[in-house]
Image (cartoon, helix red, strand yellow):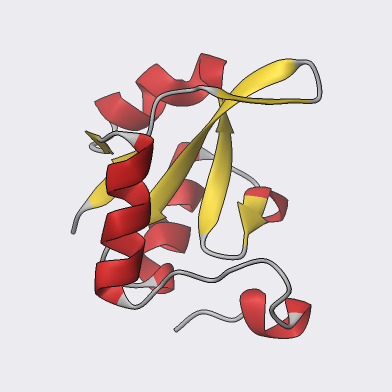
Length: 95
């Protein structure tokens, strides 16, 4: 099981955010996020949005730190990258 997280450099809603991803499956990602107590509503297409204050919690739980470009590369390599504009119902499914 490998879960990755990029640094909290993405602004939104008055906070900075990280992206939490899996390079294996969405099921693996959902399981990890649930263990962290991250609500399913934080899942967006192919990643979970994690606020900066939870970054250390994710790393402590086993997420591997990676740069933002590396996160995108890993998603593409695993065939898990979902771009904006995809069917929302499909994005909620696990693979």
